[in-house]
Image (cartoon, rainbow, N blue to C red; front, side):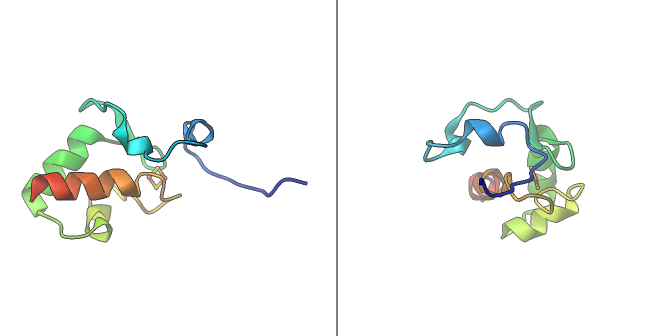
Length: 83
Ligand code: FES
């Protein structure tokens, strides 16, 4: 019997076996947070304006990161690049 796993992210099944799924090329119009449909452009603009220090502060951008948590590594990378 397999463990139940529910996630709204359609790519979650494609990341098994990969160390860093955030290494993929991401365009500004790509959706990063699938739970809340937040694009990279929105996240980058939000972080330039607010200058968050931790991923939890990115939740002010349309709730990004507050669903399944799949996008949190992307949020961390955005924060690191902004500072
Ligand atoms: S993709 Fe689920 S919280 Fe962002």
